[in-house]
Figure 1 (cartoon, one colour):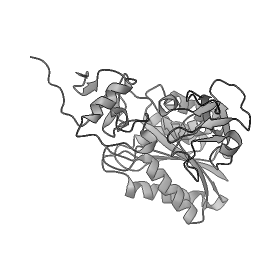
Figure 2: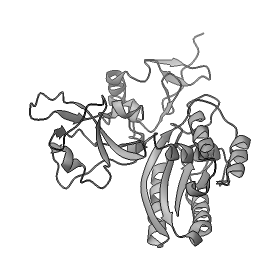
Figure 3: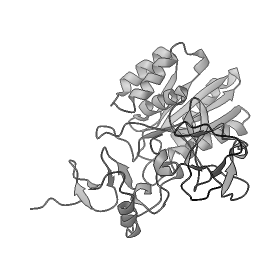
Figure 4: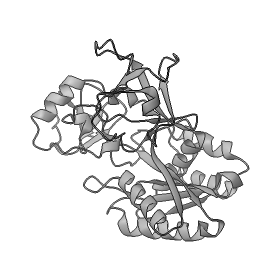
Length: 247
Length: 73
């Protein structure tokens, strides 16, 4: 059974980030033999003076494949983890959704999209979670993180939002690789041009510093643009971080 | 370089895409600490845009480490 685990607002200015908390949870679930976990995605939410975020207002989400009987133990474990490990002054929230058991996934996705451009209250988040049969809980502080946690799950399920946590590493510090070689990386599902031009397997891609994939159409996509390097061998280059800010 | 926002915070006056200025300010700042990888948004690590003490605002970011600006008398 595939579940989405989404967390928000676990950090303060001096603590480790919410992304690291998500990584620790995913590692522990795997170590306990409860299931296997996917990559983690970061989802940007609304930046507005009325929202009490720490510094960037982003939620983190990952999928886990767990056995039917493990759902409740997972929720219990993650809840306890957030209570113990979240930073002082944070307002952590947890959402655990089972996409296959949700009749109205679109409502959760729509909530996620709204949370990128609207101030939403905790009551609305709890009401929606209850109606959709999604676990939503707060684990300290004001609990405001439930809004971002629910939104993060919806945005992950949309398949079209966010950047993956971490960057692509290869066995050696390659300066460029062919498209079919990039596709060998376990986290790269697709290599795609931002302008929509078709790529060939043998096309060369210049690798920028710390290349990163984004979530598009449910896949981890390495976006490339026409090469500016002056190297006539390479037709493409990976996007700069500045260009990935929009995802 | 900075102005006072409506809540009295020190806000970067040049928005979210002044790459050179943000790098220049961070280069001369004793408070800079790089944010976690997933929150870094520019290649050059030493940039206010990558600092863990920048708090994104609607138009720009506020610095949570430098002292607030005082209102001119």
